[in-house]
Amino acid sequence: MAYIVTGPTAGIGRRTALELAKRDTVILVGRDPAKLDDVRKTIERDGGRAVPIVCDLSDLASVRRAAAEIIGLGLPLTGLLNNAGIMQMHPTTNTLGWDLTFATDHLGPFALTEALTPHLTDGAQVVFICSSCEDPERRPAVIAGFRGGRYLSAEASARGDWAPGGSKLPGRDAYATAKQCNLATVLVFAREQPRLRFNAVEPGFNPATDLGRDSNVFLRAVAKYVLSPLAPFIKYWSNPRTAARVITRVLTDTSGGTGVYYDENGRPFQGSELVHQPEFSERVVAETRALLARVPV
Ligand SMILES: NC(=O)c1ccc[n+]([C@@H]2O[C@H](COP(=O)([O-])OP(=O)(O)OC[C@H]3O[C@@H](n4cnc5c(N)ncnc54)[C@H](OP(=O)(O)O)[C@@H]3O)[C@@H](O)[C@H]2O)c1
Image (cartoon, helix red, strand yellow):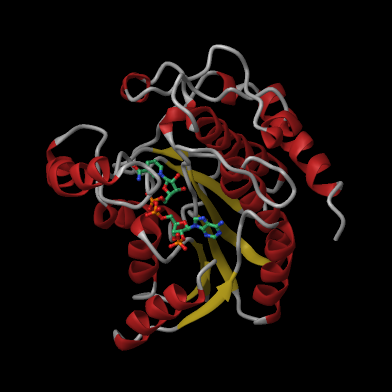
């Protein structure tokens, strides 16, 4: 049995990869070969088995290559964790001119999942790490400057265009929209593919990770050394160790639940009103497929 983990080189993904490696082989999907090797060595030192696969999720050609390499390993693929993600405070684009956050957080994981699902074993779990900031009614996210997902279309998101009424802070609309698209994908794929299970996890606010890595040094230090120790005592907050336990429980669950969104404690969670409207989530999936199909192989 093998679990695929994207973004295993830092934060929540690294912790989860180490946790999963106590049970089975872990396929480590990341963009930095040296960091991947470091995680592989840690896992092997503890008696586990890991296979690194280099993949830049913001680059479709790289995603397609990585999917082919994973399939070529010939391992029984029992789970896929779409964890890798970025939240840019200073938005940039990829080589196709696509918003880098939307490409990395939604388009790449979507393409990877579509390429791998036919090769996953029956009953395999596919888990997407989402974020409650997709919900414009979510109080803590609103206080942090988010205004929920601002989806117009997949093409508009790729261009970096967001629905009016969004955040005044750069990068927040891209992140919240990409995360809303993750959740829409889970809900639609769960309905489309009863052979597999698709679930989502909101890991809680984890101030110790590298997610806000392009914010200023002072804010990062405050997050790491001041906010992070407070996490166990604050509602909605968490840390990579706790998040990894919750995610591992969902990813290895065999009770058959699909289309469920879990909160930072592993309890069922709601998400925005919009994402639960089938016409919205199905439009997200159809438009994403159409956009990706236009990129030459
Ligand atoms: N931290 C929070 O408060 C929070 C809250 C809600 C949801 N989340 C979600 O949790 C997930 C993990 O985030 P985190 O907080 O653990 O962040 P993190 O510490 O920054 O880790 C992100 C991981 O994604 C990888 N990654 C980034 N861009 C990539 C790309 N183009 N191709 C391949 N891998 C890439 C990073 O690789 P490198 O090591 O090479 O950079 C790293 O392994 C994300 O989906 C995030 O949106 C986080």
